Length: 307
Image (cartoon, rainbow, N blue to C red; front, side):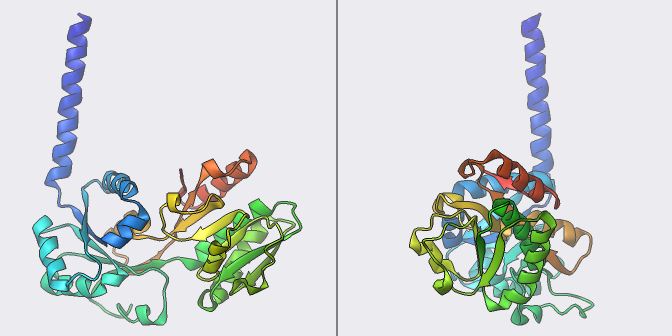
């Protein structure tokens, strides 16, 4: 009798699994364009896991097309067609905007999503908000929210430590970034003092800091064998970063795809999407700090990720 019940249970599991697989297979997929250099630095195993995760959240397959860096636009379009002739959405990173334009010209009925990273004047002109028939669903990284969250993270690391907290950011980010950072920092509260620099020339490498933030400038700090906890704006595979890297702010195409798809379904032609904070929990020995970091990360859409 027990054997019979087990057999029935296995049959049900197989039928349900088959039904789910069929459901995903018959729905038009989302195609995502990437290239070999990015995939190697981001982590190919990590991408496979995120491809499954994105598919589950989207309720349809998310299929990545990997091309050689700088691949010819016509070859990219042909390769996308070979994967699926009528995908539900196609997602392009900004570096392949020419391919995105060409795809839209050939298949105007298929929605195209362009993930453009941090906004600048050149990008802002690609898809003017005044267009009645926009070329793309175009989304940028939410710099203000990113720095607000990082301000909170830095305050948690700072705690009652009176030392300075160096924040390296380039001039382009300074206006928005500094204000947002300080708002987040003050929301948590800390005895530490944030200082904003564009280069590492003013940094005393002999001084222990509660945390260092590297965002857009100061990347040469990483070449100095840093010993301080680090918050890094990058999409690098955590395995390629130093042991001191505690949080990675990831605004890659994989970090933003699901939010972008949801925004496009709602008809939001343009908008901003925050980076995904990846908290490398195994590198944070203080469990109280780790708990507070996770709490702060989850306070915005629950978009934290931990190794």
